[in-house]
Length: 89
Image 1 (spheres, rainbow, N blue to C red):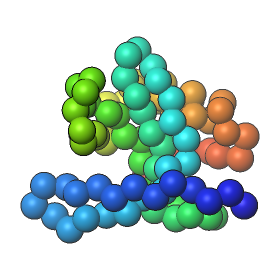
Image 2: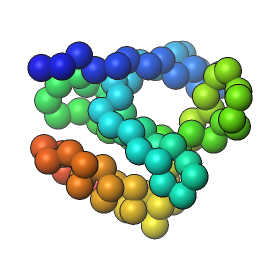
Image 3: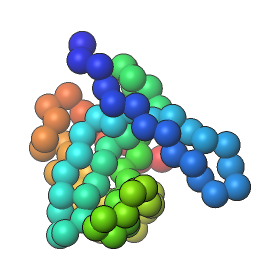
């Protein structure tokens, strides 16, 4: 199994959280990353949208939660990765 890139997010006012980057894509001028809390097997996954401006040193990500955007981006990630299927709570 290939080693996944691990990224640490520092939510404002909260403890840092580590995620593993499963895939990334660019849609409509925005970068999106699919991250999981587990390096292998089933885990919680989030789709994050990069809101940082070109040239900024640190990336600013937001969890994609708007239904239409989430469905569209999740569909792209499902097409890119044969072994992934999203389940919503």
